Image 1 (cartoon, rainbow, N blue to C red):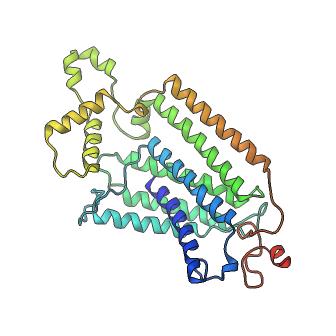
Image 2: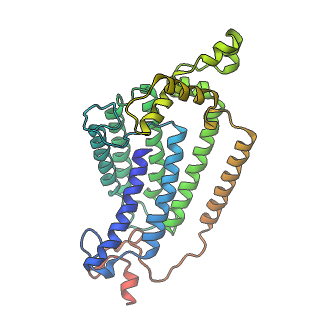
Image 3: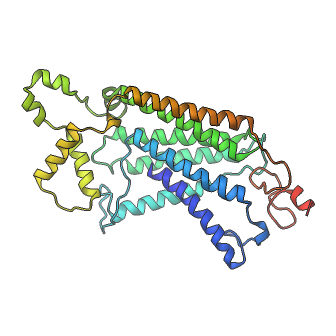
Length: 334
């Protein structure tokens, strides 16, 4: 989740830098002339607004797969790979983020819609392979997670990314914006129902998917234990969450009484996302699914397409015409 968020965030910051760079009399990192600047459609709608959708999607993915934070603030001068505050972990995070960012720049759809883009197959393979390298590098960095859990969320991230990039190999939309909305809405629907499935099968998911031992529910605990004893038994997972809360609060020391109270509160007042879905949860998920299906149907019809002169670098096969990026038709009509 952190990696996906970092990537979307990098694209968002990239757009801001490109716009601010105009004050120098040039545009972009390659010092292109101002008339080569992207249209507002490309910068504001496709690259900026859609990044917010991607960040929202990444956050939901991280919550469903219970991804642990890769890094935490503040940074401490330490080379401990298991400490998310350590300088070593932050350095790893930056290196991994830059690697994924640069690999994403392999993306190219200059041939336009309804054309085969073989370069994006390379992008897909390189990106997926890099995630697996990152998985191997991060495998022992999360002491509160099983190895299977770490592998599971990296595999989920890999297949999720493959799904997103598959659409770029042969773009089937005349508008990149509509394509992005269809991909992100369909991915959102898949994540919503994966969450429902996980919550319906908590023990099975914990044991088979994440590799943890089965957690007995309160009812089975109370069968074998007195009520008072059952209340005093607090799962280790609650202590881990309590430690995370203390850590995120910036405390370096905590009393046993405070830690036990936090863990007990978490045990007796569990996060609703850890419980089987209620009827309200199912209704809300159905409404969100319906809303996104409506968006997909609208995007499939591709209304309001503009076929006049416009900047089309990512869809057009003439990225360098008369010294400028853009569409040949645009320059012919100037």
